[in-house]
Image (cartoon, rainbow, N blue to C red; front, side, top):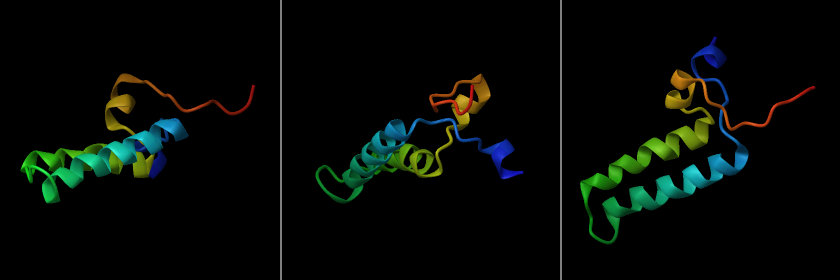
Length: 69
């Protein structure tokens, strides 16, 4: 059931990049300019941890490598 709502559609390298960018964005809330805009870093962080991008699901895109023939 959950795989229908949140299918894995991100390549592992993209997931790592999203987590890093999310952490950097989120760090802006606590360090540096201390701006609340850093909370937008939660979006790439969560999608990177889950491995599913809702926007990719809506438009039918997947960067995940295919398994099988």
